[in-house]
Length: 559
Image: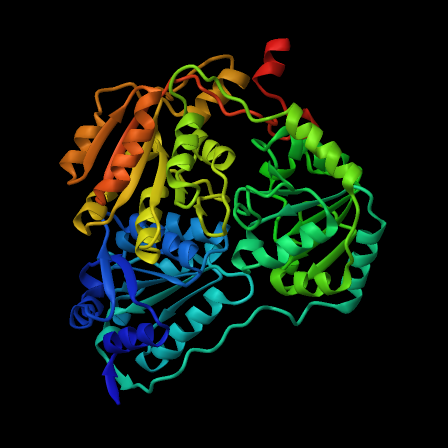
């Protein structure tokens, strides 16, 4: 049957099982929005307050559900406002399809009103980007975009469509979506055998879990693997929840703000098994000194990550879940009780600590964990609050921590929380943000309130840019250049002005009741938690230092 380009876009979205789209309309994309209006009973469009919020919402939806997130924007500034969200998804391997509309084909390259080469702009931060100038190629391009977004190592794809194509007609025929299975073609038996041999020889193995284990759905195989090896397990920020934070083998996060046990344990181990991790600088510290006493097995779907940041002794390329299935068939139960006991001693010697007097970020996170029984989806912005959320909330399942790891995007959390709540309406969804981050995205409170979404925003409000101030305190001689936010902004009034409920918390005993009330209200709530401006995140490894240089407040006092 003959359909317009706009009708083809909608039909292709329906083919792919898309039921939720985030976006903001404008002149060039009006034809597509007109079709969305006609199909609003099949595709729920969420109008965000800003296009960046739409990109982050599509990202949060994808992380919470494992599906492809979809966002839309018009040409020019509408499209460029998606860029930060697209880059955020790219750095963390999140499947998102961004659909933009451009000026008409005859106006391209003429500096027309709101014309920009968005496909060119996003080329370095997408798996693929393309512009459609022929309506006959539109359906196949959209189908290809979804396939690319979710295959192998997932990531964002952008499809830009000229306005004339949205009005032109072409023949359309329904197609079943192409099944995208796990990547197994590069898994080699000899690599599996080499890994098994290294595992058999190890006396002090340590398992390091990254975001790839979450993406591949490897939790069950990972738990079996860890307990068969009887080996301690650490994770990256992106790997949280792949291995339960309540498991006795879990040692906490690795890296710059990882636990002393994880950092020292990885330094002492004789075999490090990295599963779906890319060895970012925030994890390794000084890469040359990383796991210096260990042989390293690296399991990853992306061959480009092998030996990129850290040299390995054995690598297995392929879907993490599939690789672990094959390894679990080959390995036999190990007795590493002595090594596990050594790790347990370190866990007892180096627990996470914070000042028990007064209201602090860690206390807020612990209260959130207590009230939600560890069953919420926790979304974060970026900064000290993000690290406290990683340290003090125990993630028992994958896809329950949603955070910008690779790009470190301030202003990410609220849009992502909206996407996560729409994707998982059965879950309590809480965004943890600092006051600096909240200022960047608080307009999305209006989006949540307008859509009657029970999203809870907890602002860890220290009236400063906390993480930057921490570095200024420790490494820049207390020179607080442009990091003080102590002005007259009242977040409770802001919340009320945007249609939400605002609650201010200034004492420890108010935290639990505030969270309980926010959950019970089943509406959009902002909890403004006032903490001290000089609370810090510990432990810490200085940038570029080896992991064994990890220090905490007690170490600073000794100096």
